[in-house]
Length: 251
Image (cartoon, rainbow, N blue to C red; front, side):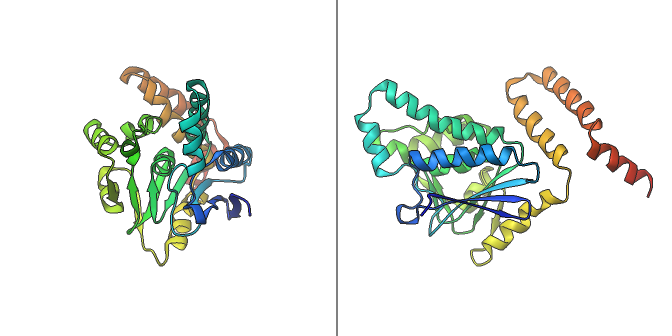
């Protein structure tokens, strides 16, 4: 059985974490498979979105036991290389051309919660649970902080990562970590209805929105305005924009 199932539905690439007996815990093989799938998806001009979900009862429970054992026995240099491998996955999600959506059911904990947080959008069932419990074993959810502090306030991020508690999907939505909540019964259908929006809007415009939004993280206010101006001008030159203006004027 592959650890990652890759399917296509319409113009969406569906990536299913397929280790249900391990609550879809992350290991080297699954991380490598996700990276490979993201690279391939980035080269497919037919795709308008990528969905990451989990098989079985949970989205993802974080690192598996063998990975934790390896961490405990590794040197600093080995652990740094390993951490950079996970960081690369999270960065690739942000660098993907099309929106990457985490579809969370069950639990998204530790690295699994980090994986969801790194996605552009998060949808979840009402019963889903989230959390960064790493501090309970002396570990730190350090890589995900680069994303978490851009989603919630500094004080909330501090509380989440230093107290290690689980929280509900409803709380996650209130805090800005989850975009939409869907029913357990119709979750798969509602997720696909949600992502199908990207089949109806301009692919190039969405790509430019994603690029400039994250580009502004490193810019001051004035430089952000300038970056927006450049992307605005770039969008005007696209075929989608020119055709869209033509259709609008011909109404």
